[in-house]
Amino acid sequence: MCAQIEQGKLKVTDDWFLKMLNQYKDLVPYLQPNATGTAVEPAQNLFSQGQAAMLATGSYHIAAVRGLGAQFPIELVFPNTSDGNAKYEGVYNATFILGVNSASKNQAAAAAWIDFLSEPENAAYYANETAQHVSVKDVDYTNPDLKRLSPWLDKNTALAARFQFQNLDVRNAVEASATAVISGTSPEQAAEAAQKIVDERI
Image 1: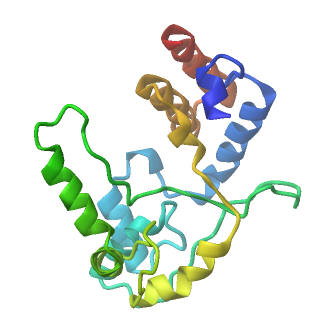
Image 2: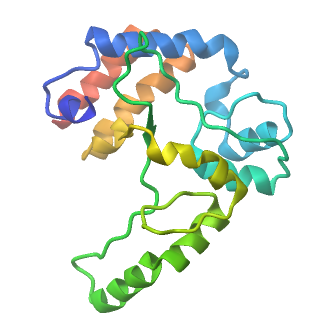
Image 3: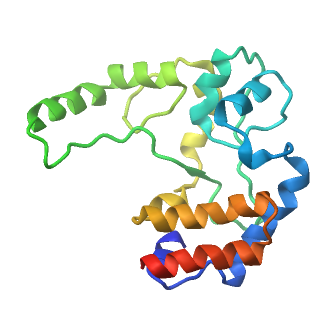
């Protein structure tokens, strides 16, 4: 859907997007006051101390939360708001992406670095130290959190839709509409403001 917003085939003022923004509005009573002004580090700290029941983020924050002293089991929850017939069981962000800049004068060195990081032993070190599953085969996960969350590797998941945007201005406008709703703007107003920016950029 995000790619289609960018192509002008769908709009954030359409009913399907307004429904999603209204779901964000429904969450507001369960968020801490001034939630949109909360920085990442304080949110991690509240969660690690048990003062927040949920940290609305991804697995990439597990290592930081553990570093703050969290001793409790951590699980991932997919916020499924479908009628029970969801196409996917969750979403993922591919955080272990390696590439070589085509304009670089050091492509050979970059390619060698990618080869090094793509070796299962080296990828495993990265994974286990950062509590992040990687897209390299035959990696031995020893991190307890990664072992517990490994069933997610076999679930039917989709790449997070926001990563389908190619225009950063469009992406920022669409994402900002949800933040605006959390801060008190009506879903309709937030969608109209975002669509105005999308229309200017496509």
